[in-house]
Length: 183
Image 1 (spheres, rainbow, N blue to C red):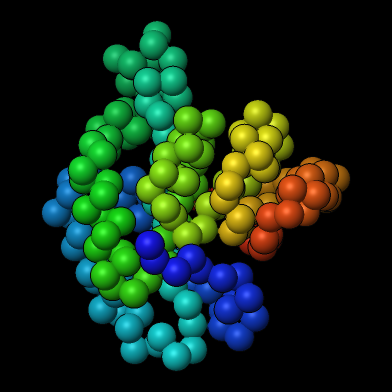
Image 2 (image 1 turned 135 degrees about the horizontal axis):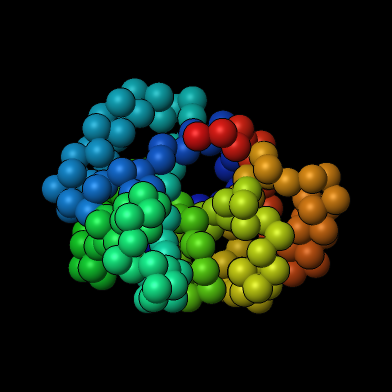
């Protein structure tokens, strides 16, 4: 088993997150190409920075309501059109590890939390929109995953405090990421 990423290492280096999310376009070759390009660009900065490749997991059988499966809603279409199977995900994760980059994933539902842990991602990332999604937060808090980064760009200070307090009580390694919520 690989050595898990340790948040203590972040004290000496900044972490740069390279977003893949659904940008693999549901195409394994395109996903590999993204990882390879990120690896090539970041390699010369390994002494100064840590780099993570971040994906997103959604259990589409429960994440997208059945009445919207055939809709023209752009986000639903994008989620469905970029679906990868288990073997394709394993291939992408392995490519990240072979590139000496950190694996990171944002789960958007409770089933996906289990998949992030099963697929052995080094960092579990919580989206700013999910910081007060308490069924999801509690699932993460009760999980075995220790290294968590939470985006807080869209959250009030009260929500951030509640989240942080909860995770610290669960003995999680927490880092907060302030992000701009406009995409």
